[in-house]
Length: 164
Ligand SMILES: [Zn+2]
Image (cartoon, rainbow, N blue to C red; front, side, top):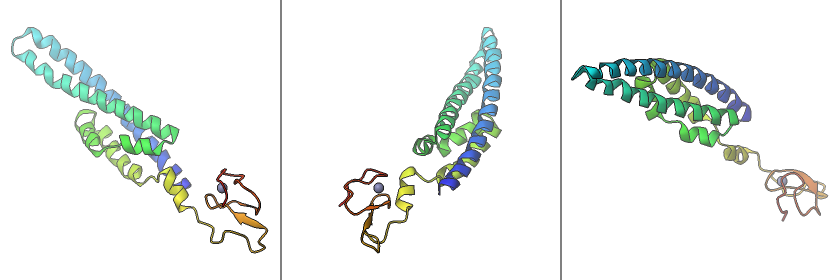
């Protein structure tokens, strides 16, 4: 489970890096376009169209900031945060305003991000010990983590759980 997560995380990081690079390119392009359109403000009516690249620029920067947060969460291995920032809606906004490559990368990353297992489900999936004490009766198993310990132990030496 952990290894699957690690493999998925590493490909997610790659998708996000490519998305980020193309996002930066689109921000630069849109900034130049906005500037050119703003220069047209001197011409009545035409300047009005400056609103188009400026709105696109703002959306592109918002996508960029989101990708940056996702990369931070992926780097830190914070899967629940990564899942909460990830959104198909923003991937589609990215497709239109942050460059086609950025949008496609976000759409591709969406799959493995959804498949990532949360930390808690890893513990739930850990095989629970079938018996509370060993065959010899001299040791018992922690109900939380399954560590074997002497029968008289009050607290699990591994996870610290109070023993019944
Ligand atoms: Zn334990």
